Length: 75
Image (cartoon, rainbow, N blue to C red; front, side, top):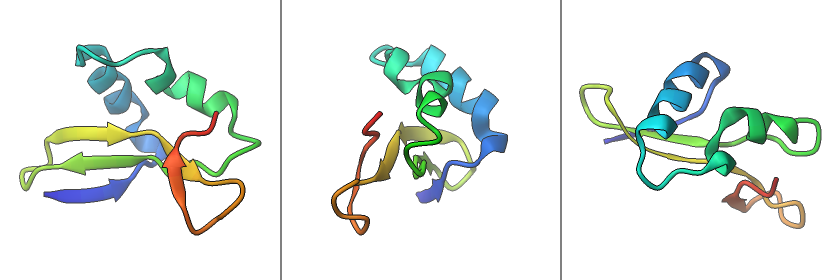
C-alpha cells in the first residue's frame, strides 16, 4: 500500500473514484473542495495498492488552529 498527497493531475481520477463510490457525497467532489482553495491548504490523501490502483481517498487540510494536525477537509 502507498499513501500519496493529492495533486491536481489526479482530479479526473478523483472524480471517477467518487462517482463509483457508494458512500461518497458532494462534499468529496473536487469542485466543492477547491471552492475553499483560497482559505485552506489542500492536503488530501490518495491510498493506492502496489499496482497503483486507488483504494481510498481522504479530503484533508491542516487544522486552522494547529498546522501540525491534518483534519478531514474543514471546508
